[in-house]
Structures are given as structure tokens and as C-alpha cells.
Length: 261
Image (cartoon, rainbow, N blue to C red):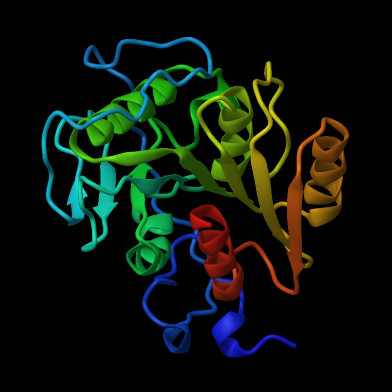
């Protein structure tokens, strides 16, 4: 039986505060009807082109907003950062109708503890492009955010992860498997399905899902997804938990440790 500190938390809850302050109310998030504009050259396909390199500039530590993006992007750099010691990086993808804070808030505590850089973009509509259209404008935004980060911070090229929740987890499994030459690990919290893509490489996968999830029921999602991934040759660390559409703090911490290992 889970303690209150380990109960599943949802996309809009401040699960990064403390376990004792956990809230049990489901919160759907605020709808955003953002669209691409002339500042967004459309990129067709799921391939990411930004790559870690020797930084040409410097940036502050702590949490900041990405100043060049058409859409909001949050970046977190731990206080222990030094250009001489490249750090792991995790790209955080929120759920449908969510916001950059949804995964940034809880993962920021773990990133400070472990020494990990976080990049949390927001999608261009109410969900990620490939879930309603195709890989395109959101890939462009993610590339811009990663390129901005790599130019200012030293990142360990062997430890680049993608983390997603709900629709963001579905997107992470697609984007990560299409970029396995760059992404080493994927964390999928409560995904819905596997997007049809041309895969490249075999990044390791950490997946979680609640057994009483009423938004994306486990029988038709993770219990189908995990065997399919393993049949394709992926190594999948899979965790089911007693709870609904969210992420227990204990599993979030385990995922962070797994990415930084």
C-alpha cells in the first residue's frame, strides 16, 4: 500500500514541492491555442539536428525562460554546473493541454540533486504535432531549444534523455526512437500508443503506468506497448503502480536516478 507521499500526482499538481504537500485533485491544465507563425520554419519529420558541442557562450545556473523561442521553453541548470564537467540533459515533454512547468517542477529537485540540465518546451497547439498532424513545427521548436542550450552549456552527449507524460510520453517514445543515435534513454510516464516511425538505434526505455488510469487505460496502452517494444529489441524497465493518470514521487525519483546513472 502506498503512503500519501507516494500517491500518483497529476500533470498540473506541484509534485516538486514536497511529498507531504501532495494534492489528490485531478487538474487538466490550461488550454492554449498557439499556432506556428513566420518565425517557425517548418521541419518535416522527427529527426533532431541539434547536438552537444563545446559551448561558444555562457549561461546562468538555476531556472530561466528560453528568450528566443516563439513558444515558451524553460531551462534548468543545477548550481553545481561547471563548463569543465559536461552534465546529463533531459528534454521534458508535458501532457495534452499542459505547460512547461508540469514536468519541470517535480524534476527540478531531482536535477539539482543529481546534477542534470533540464529543457522543457511547450507544444504549438493543445498537444504535440505528430499526435494530430505529423512531426513538424514542434520538432523545430525542440531543435531551437536544444541548440540554444548546447551553445551555452556543456552536455554529456552519452546522456541525453527524453521524458514525457501522457501525450508527451507518446511523443517521447516516437521522437526518442527516431533519434536513437542521439537520445540514449527515454522515460515514458503513462503513454497512449506507439507512433509509426522509422527507428534509429535502440535507446533504453523506462516506462510507468497506473493500474487504475481512467484517462489512458493500462490494458490498451502500456500492457500493449511494452511487449511491442521488447519485440523490437528495446530494453524496457517497466513499472506499474496502484494509482491513476499521474506519476508517483517514488517512481519519478527512480526515473531521474536511472537517467543520471
